[in-house]
Amino acid sequence: MKKTGNNGGALGYVSVVVVLAGLAAALVWFGIPMESSRTKKSSFEPKMEPEALISKDFSWTNDMVWIPPGKFWRGSETGQTDERPVREVTISGFWMDKTEVTVKEYEAFVRETDYVTVAERRPNPEDFPGADPALLVPGSVIFARPSSPVSLNNHYAWWTYAPGASWRRPEGADSSISGKENFPVVHVCWEDVVAYADWAGKRLPTEAEWEYAARGGFNRREFIWGDELSPNQQWRANIWQGEFPMVNSSHDGFEGVGPVAAFEPNGYGLYDMAGNVWEWCLDWYLPDYYATGPVIDPPGPNTSYDPNEPGVMKKIMRGGSYLCDDSYCSGYRPAARMKSSPDTGLSHTGFRCVIPGPSPTQIAKYLRENS
Ligand SMILES: [Ca+2]
Ligand SMILES: [Ca+2]
Image (tube, rainbow, N blue to C red):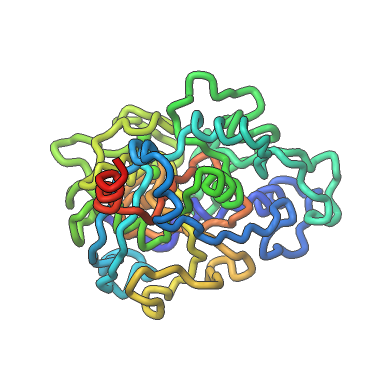
């Protein structure tokens, strides 16, 4: 198992602002704001108390699994420096979506609310001083496999701004979601996923909750299924085989995003906690948070700092994607941390949600007393 330097981050350092600026000489970017004005500030307060759900039916539990309260060893001694120090962390129980949020689920939210995702909004010219307004069109960033060898240090070689790309057109203006209802929704930025979570009466998982759930009740394993990447030559997740970013041998059965739940679930019954698409978390990113943060239900820091891009606030995302391979990213390890600009949805980024309670025991008690 190779442990590379920080190059795995290049998959996550992409911001729509930076890519736009990198692509067109006409787009001269004089400073990256904390949050692009393409997004509006999104204050999220977890509002789901156990009592809030007691009066409703419990059919929502069908698509979620209960992650029991407990302790786990967070981080990795052998991974990146921001995965240390390894500390035992205590987590309260919560429900978690079994799968990444699907196109069908996101579509239901949009149909009911008329929500317009950030990728579908016209970029604000004030964010791009000096740019030709004609170039500022709605769109998103997609992976485009280079046709000749490229330096792994230059992620512009495989990320490109695609006008018209959005969750409805995941591969660009001419693509569609027809037949992909069971695929994870992508091209959703942090604001877009929080809007969905609010609508669904859920919230994003904290980074600690996400890792605890991903480990599936097993401690200190390299991967969520064990310590071998592909036991018996069997791939256990939709990741990248071949030579990133040019040769994708798709030995796991999927060249790009695949349908949710195509692989065996983890120990808690959660699907795709490794690979397929990255999953946004609630937390800001701080590289040294494990050394300084609390060890009981860590809520995440209240600020962000990424030494690789000091001017850009970053949110955590977890689990790796179909673009992660052993030599380059290995973001599918449960300990691997990734961060990305919250204003940017990408073709490999989605999410899933959690609900802190009530526990199955509380539900059973309620049903007993109210039947
Ligand atoms: Ca694959
Ligand atoms: Ca995933």
